[in-house]
Image (tube, rainbow, N blue to C red; front, side, top):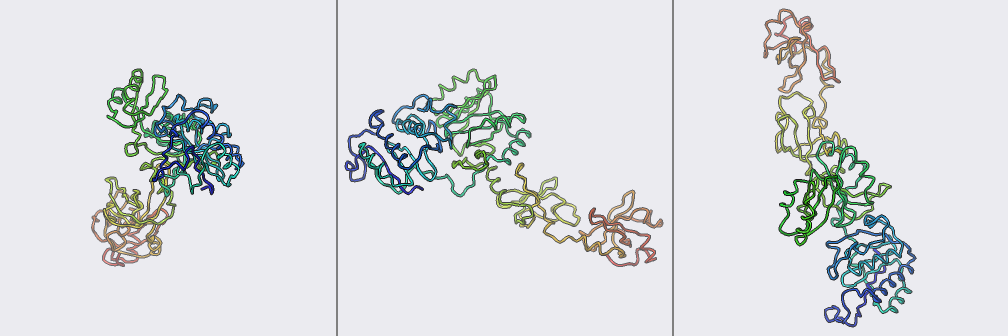
Length: 504
């Protein structure tokens, strides 16, 4: 915030009523003449006093709410000829010389339909308000400029701050940048046919639309306006008649249409302009309608373009989507982090879903337990609170796999210590190449394989599932999670076979 802020107007403070409202004869519109000239001279004087020769355009707006309504907007919003690149040059962060800055102030004083903040960071600011109120901020007291302003017949008054100082919609929310993760996610979404269009909003109420394919994303990215707001949409455009029928009875909407050559055009209109715009759609190949109200505006995900050095300096925020909120949460996670959550569901294919602070993570079957089980419901239940370890944070697909067994002690090293032991356990499965025997006295105990070569010939034809069999643990492969057993070696140690030996 700048320490010296002045409200500069043509209104004499002595002519205010008891409520502080101006009651004099000065009109609340621009004279397009000598009074306007004094405003511009005052701005130039403050800029010179501060030592500023260039200004940055911040948070530009075009049409819509940027138009104060006291004068009709003009073609080009008063910006014609100011930017060599056309209207796209009127973007956040664009640096302009003082002469161009003064012409922008003129356009705003004339209520031509364009508005922005003009600032030199930490040094100077110019904000144009309603009814010919001008707010000039400086890092210096600017005594010379104040004297010059008074000599011009204007009235500067010291304020604590400009009422038009920028304030974020949600100062606690981190804006998603269009960084490497964003572009990787966009590539994935387009490849998976989840996204088709990119909306580029370079000024409030001014946007361009781009149809996306896997092959043109890089080219589209290279053409974007600096610091633009981006919104990714699914296949937005529909049959023209259907699009026209979807227009609301009233309200502000953006109508988007695509001609047969693939050229996309959009315009923001209200109910008074619907008829005029829909007549332009007669030759459209396809069209769509997007509400301009936040609760009805539903892109897939959004971002703001950072500067070329990767730093996000644009101050405006996009309206967050569920995906954007997930992104913000995922940024707080890291691999190896231990989290708590509640089991929300168990899918028919076995994946367990867990709510970890509003985001749904998942546990694949192998990560539920070190021990064998028949179904995930044998390990967890819906509504159960669990503690698990984050295995990965996939910012592209916005997925977080968890491991429940990672926070449990691995029992396999203890099993390995039992090599050479003779135990008796139930036969759990018979296969052509041998039989499986549970070697621990618990329902979820580990099972080992008795290969046919290690099975006493007399038992090969008589054994059944459920029978107790005495075996020797001859190998434990921790890496492959396998236990090899021998019935013949167990009989050598205990000739009685299944009737003797250590219990499982």
